[in-house]
Length: 365
Image (cartoon, rainbow, N blue to C red; front, top):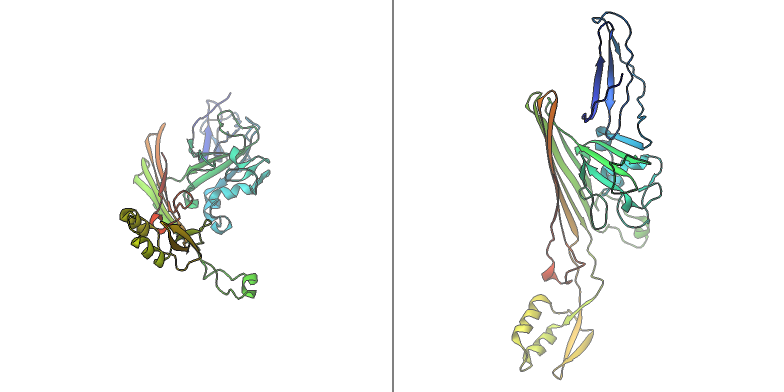
């Protein structure tokens, strides 16, 4: 005969089969993996039903239902992954261990690895079945913290029609949940200009200190039971501030010198309101490099050295809750929130008065 069990949570199971007049057979450690159909064959032998056979050394179970290629990465691999290799890639860097997966390099737009020679923009990102794709530059919308990953799978080749929205790789992730035991973690990753070695080429030029680069990633998680065997919770918070050295704006900003502003103020008929707005938002140049003529008066102007603050603070918090009202029913809920706080100097006027942070918020429900 045949049997099929759908929608099982990932994990390790014990499979038991019994029938009248046959010995009961149990298969231990049957692993159910993310986005994979596990096939297990059970053979019953004649005997008393109260006799049982337990198979503890099961062979490697192969998914014979599809031609897709899948690479599974467990929670331990995600949490132990070094953040220093690529801070922006996170746990997705694990996919580079698979065949046919390479760094995107300079291949087209999008973020993430290149699958089978395709552009990264062809990838599709899912979190427990929910869409996690950016619609502008493509790539994952929310970068989940490494410690929050239960399992991560990359599907390649001819995957099932249920996976669409891209011909590249299918990046599928499950977030951790609670259990009958309380568990928690605390973590921190730090690198900055004081810890990093000075580049030898800079040292030969007399530059014995590094430009600013301060990155810190820290946070913690906690999970456990609300009601044993019935209701569980899990939560994680992570904060990632990064500061880099500022650089002058690409387009020089010119302004009147202090003497130029005095000359403008002495011109009769000049709008004092407009001059007040100009002096408020455009500081005087420290020295003159050119001049302009206003109402027949020569106004000295110069370049204003403007360097915008350069930093990006990312705060991520998420939570999941699992409820088992019966042995046949399971209810799961989760919430992911990521907040980016930094400066956008590409669309705003390059003046200190307009240096305001532009927070962006991304959510997955």
